[in-house]
Amino acid sequence: MNLILPYLATLVVFFFIYNILTWGLNIQFGYAGVLDFTFVTFVACGAYFAGVFALGKGQNQAGFEWILGLNLPFPIALVAGAVAAGLLGLVVGMIAINRLRSDYMAIVTLATGTVIYGFVGNFAPLFDGYDGLAGLPQPFSQYLNLNSNQFTYLWVVFSGLVMVICWFIAQRILNSPLGRTMRAIREDQDAADTFGKDTVRVRLIAMAMGAVLAGIGGALLIGFIGAFSPAGWTSAETFIVFAALIVGGRGNNWGAVVGSFVVAVLINEATRYLPAIPSDPTLIPTIRNMLIGGSLIVVLWVRPQGIIPEARRRFFQLPLRPGTPPTPEVESARP
Image (cartoon, rainbow, N blue to C red):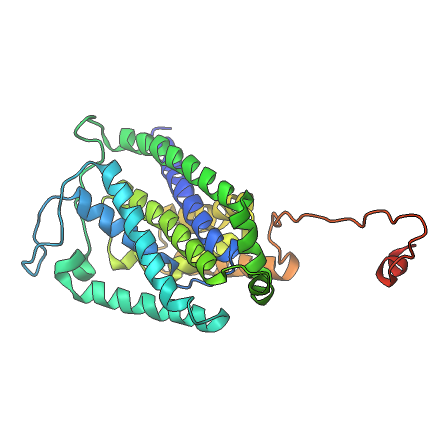
């Protein structure tokens, strides 16, 4: 029991973090139809900036100090990571959305993320290059003296509270006029342009808001693990969040929760704690990737709208006034 509870608490933390990440991608892709293939870059941005705000001054292996090293309380570092990720999302959106659409926009986001990845990895004085940041002090250690298990339980509560705030933000956007405009642009951008909607501005807002949630998730991740490096910042991580959103149902925040649980927690994270097979150490990671890809294929084939489809409003034909001839569409629809 002493081993099972911390294990389950760790999975709950990852579940909360992946919920936040999936909601962020849902705002971009599910609401506004923005194909962001560099979503994990915003997660990394939030993690890195939260790290350098919480870490003190230190030297990397090359003898350089990483930027900032402000040694601030973690809540401030969390906000800094969210703001930095949102600003980066706005910049990437201005590059990708302003003049491009669909596939070309997706390719530009992927290329931009590759450039940022290479720059961060090779410029060691920024975030310690490919070695990354490590040794982040345990958040709230100046107030609480907790062992590792107690800190895990604390992080369940803290990340759960942050997740509830992010849920409120995602739901408010979904049910607001802005959210309806995003979905209208997703369905037909030309029609939205015709009705006078500023589609570029709305999609930039979606890009920035999704990046903010990604930054919050990244900050919670580095606060929990205590380290972050480019090893956890690959295109495969973006694929996992996309798979979770598509399996659960894009455009629906409840679907994102289900997808996070099935793909990100049950398949991706829970299998990491299985003992390795001595004769074939790569077997379990290979099976893990096959399960994620297989679940995505099955859902797209059997239920492309996801486990919980997006809620759609239904509009019914109003009764005709007496003496008014029905339109051909109404006449053909009658039994």
